[in-house]
Image (tube, one colour):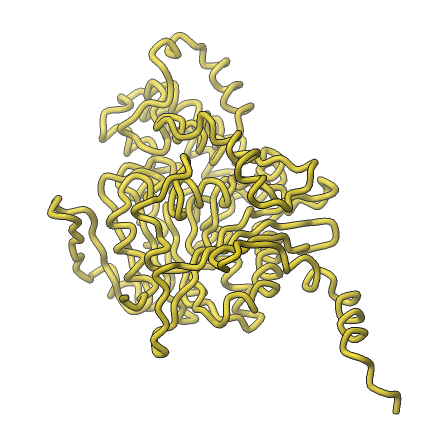
Length: 451
């Protein structure tokens, strides 16, 4: 029998055999241990950036361990380390001032720039971009496995916004298949069923007076074309038609904001822009859903992003201290979006069904004023679930949620492991638009122990 190898030599052998799991999971952090960040090489030459915050409110009482929330941004290709962190739920806002409604009040927070090529994450060759939601999930599971020692057995909740919902359900299923413990999944205004959303746009905009009968007819006509293409599994054609439909919506609604239908997404003089010019601009300006302005436009409307790109590439970059010199943070990666074009219009209803059948706690939440992932479209795909508890869920009563004596702020309906939150007064980015009920919802989801 050969003599036992020294531990160091054994680790070297293991790392050589599984480089993705052993490389770059260390990283850096603050002296007090409240923050850590770093890179994980999820595949050869593919590097994913992560940032973990430990809550100052942390309480461990044994029976209810303190939870961790993994936040997944949308796009695909929008930066969770940037937007989710500084714009929505992290400890500091976009001006680097303390946020009163940070989700750190109820959980530790893990932000990632996902998929690789997003934000501070990078690939050494663009051919290494992920092409499917499942490939993105594969990389995320590698990252979670590498970071598991840092989580110390904390219950992990995956909370997603927008296209991040598709990543959330595919990642949760893959992680469960590999023996991980996923405590719950929350899908916020998530692009789970593109068909149900595009079919909802015309009728919703007609009901709220943003299009007339002619506009409704044009929207429904393009939506019907998308339906036909999806039934024929012509997914790239459907993605092109989806962009066409956004142009039709903009032209007929005087540029309604896709993230809040009470707002406009253009200045007054933009009405003189020709349809052809508008559609060309729309296709060339990539963002959250490739709508004309997306995340950057929505946040700029609140004077939030004018200098944020500069902050991320100066103050934040200097703090982190490990970002390669040839990697710059960007608000939205067009390369990531283009690489996933073949999966963009594919539904993930079946994956939600599988999670429910496995007993995973699934929460769906929807901003009342969202158009891109309208509540009507969300409820339509929920009705397609084959989960045996669906009828009981649909027949359950809603409970109102109040905040600071300001009247009804939300409703919630629950049955077994499915929960649905209607967040009033909010558009696509719920934690920005109505943070109080969003934080109450998080407390319900994670069952955080009170301090």
